[in-house]
Length: 347
Ligand SMILES: Cc1cc2nc3c(=O)[nH]c(=O)nc-3n(C[C@H](O)[C@H](O)[C@H](O)COP(=O)(O)O)c2cc1C
Image (cartoon, rainbow, N blue to C red; front, side, top):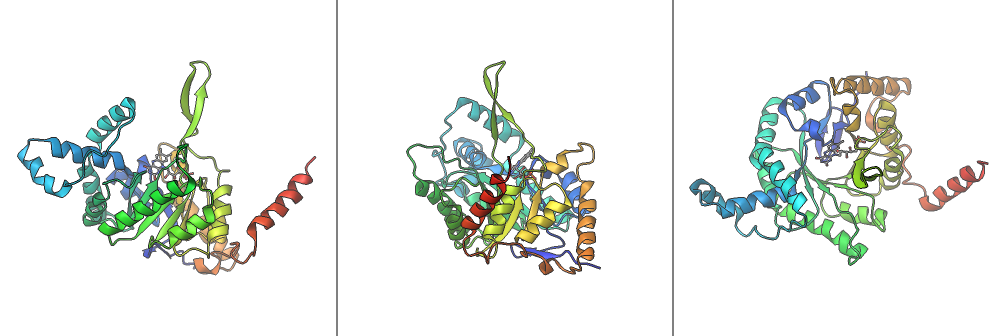
């Protein structure tokens, strides 16, 4: 018998396979199925920083007595919201009507009563302005941890790399004023010095880094001359970038690492663990068969067990990080040599 149990963000997981944040993790029915099918933990669908600010403003402008009673809680949290685009504001208000913050908190509380795997709440944010108090409500609702998806494209011509990076540190500092549950940070890879920034972030007291957020992929519809979105779901070949960075960073950071993007089967779960990930997050694979989203989970877990048995590994730590680059003195020059060797031999 092999044992898949592991620790992630200081939480006990029965295995390292986490169902990542998506529309599939926003209902109690799905959370029940996710737990029944054997996931190690689940990250809830994110709420947006803008949504928190929108509701706070709505409360403050209201005359309703019940709403006014909330106002103390929201004191000082107003008006910094800048909705640059009419379209974005319209989307947000209709989204906020459907997905209220209270519903989110109720989902956490209900899930805690119903399922026995750790529940990681999620906030999608890009600024350090005045939404962090909501992290406390998430903690009070019973979440075991909080993942902050910092979605920040460094596209502002006025801002330097360090200006952009500062935002991450300020967000963590503010959130940590409100919560004691473990906080993890889900980041993209657009950093001028990813290794050093990841190291410095890991020294802020966060419990984990999720590598990587998969950004929205822009496209252009050439018939209608419009911009559009493409490739909402990842492909099973998309895991290499994460694999590279997990291997480079594992063993060097002061926090856990969850690998995310392009992990669709037991082989890629094992690869990420061999590279040194403490856990993996999977999303797109569950959208493949729209009728039975989570049926692949038990098979993935049983295939990991079979692989471990075949390789005489009894527990995850027997092989976690075996192929990390932590002992390679200069990984960049190692990569360069591999690049030269492989690409110069292709004619
Ligand atoms: C339909 C959909 C909704 C998503 N919603 C969220 C979200 O609310 N918060 C978040 O942090 N990530 C969200 N993601 C991103 C996933 O959590 C994940 O980072 C990304 O899909 C890459 O993992 P994958 O290759 O396993 O799909 C979403 C992804 C999809 C496909």
